[in-house]
Length: 358
Image 1 (cartoon, helix red, strand yellow):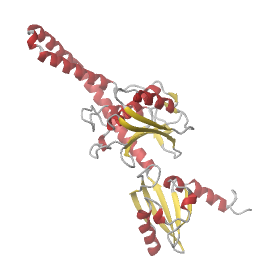
Image 2 (image 1 turned 90 degrees about the vertical axis):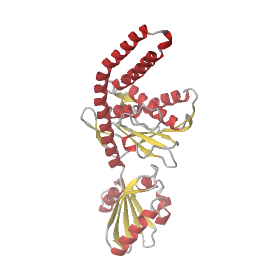
Image 3 (image 1 turned 180 degrees about the horizontal axis):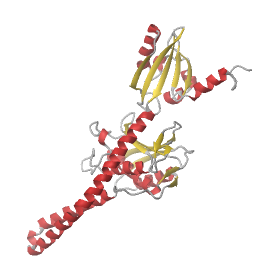
Image 4 (image 1 turned 45 degrees about the horizontal axis):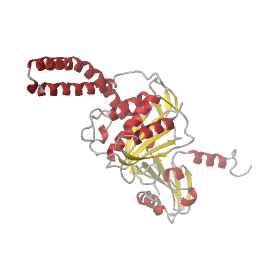
């Protein structure tokens, strides 16, 4: 039987190594990379031909973190691990990984890089679901409790205005305007009340993004350059077209406000093959391989509000209601997806939505 054939033990081993979701690097005695396996080229965003034979120290973002671990494993002939290490390598930019080194003999060391994307997706899903549940409960309570007293205040102001002269009605007019403003806020809250998504269907995400981009570039006073980096092979999503439009309108609006309505917004789509399973609104588990990112190069999100960004009434902008991203969280979780936010390499923010495939 030929060496390395599909039915040989060597062929099985090669196939297993190639299918691993981690990156595996064999580092020689001189700290050069001897061989690469698994998803090394994807995780490090460099072709295998450019990595094989290279000094580990020359791999941007990885070398300074990994070299001391490789040296220690080689010296002490023992495996070592370091969890949640920030790496600047890779297309995702500043992704966090778990690193493990193990001695292989002859001063060679195996370096394994395990991205924490799947764990962070699940964690962000839990956080967003919690925010969405809070919004639903808050919406139902406030909409019910505020309607009646607001109507009473408006009626009392109108009766009082009839007894006052024209020069004294500015205060009652002020009361009426404020009541109207609060009623508008209640109208927004009612959109969060529990409501089944009945229009789920196969959706072309690029049609949604093109529609939103056209709307954004037509906003009065806006000087926005919307860059569309689409994966042309992206399959259809299982979602609501109208709700996706609202989601990405809110995300693009946030990005444009971060740029003061001037600058570049990037809409990026990709198909992620890792098998992330999330429980949908119908209780069944679905993969969420469709990734849609809205990126800007604004000032970024303050660290103190980042953990609560999808909670209602949390806003990093003066005058913001803090309901736009809460609505995004509610709609995306109702459609069985997840949404998260991260800093963009080079400055700015990246909002990442993941959706199930139709």
